[in-house]
Length: 105
Length: 184
Image 1 (cartoon, each protein chain N blue to C red):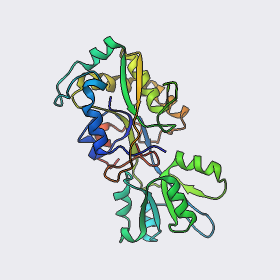
Image 2: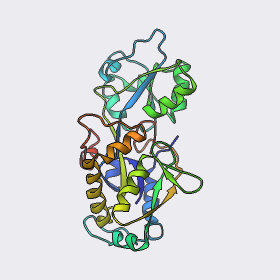
Image 3: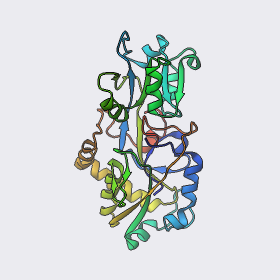
Image 4: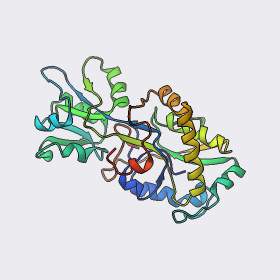
């Protein structure tokens, strides 16, 4: 069973941008920060996910599985980013944000 | 990328930027069949004052509540699907709502005990997709464009079906902007 992402969790993840995503502080909507070029050069992007098949799942060996990672990986490969690294987030249930039925992401 | 697969809700749309939905799903409504005639719509559910268990914070809570005259008297929230199933078994509620994939998994361990209706025609959908920081505009723009190509080529649908997801007629082209209204 996956858990609901809380507002605090999302903001924490966003705040990790500088180190987790290699892109520095978030910019205002509409501005470009060159992240795509950066991850193309590095060949990798880190992606947050909660474990719960068939939505998303990271195996013990780091392999990503599930519908969302499959789509993300396919798209990013075509954008010139061959590798995605999963960052599994285990979160507490919250009634402050809605969840998809049964999955809770 | 903040999340590979997050529910797209109005609240979240104020904090992150979403790609168009990867998946769109409805709730399934579970019940014990003995002596219970399941409602065919949410409207009927509310009119019959059916005692209902929902996941805390579920995406369609407000929509369902609107069908009940006094929702607090008949709707109870639970932390997870297993707790909802326990509540149905103990007859604290007559029906419970959860994702159809969660329900199918649980029913594999208890075949014949429960039945479910899915989807109900007046329910709203739960769209989910990739979430980005609003400032990552070059990545977001490129990602959205490439995802649209996947959808047009049929590759997206093939991936969905390989993971047991469905493409609902009329919901194939829901955009992130539409999903962000919370009323798709």
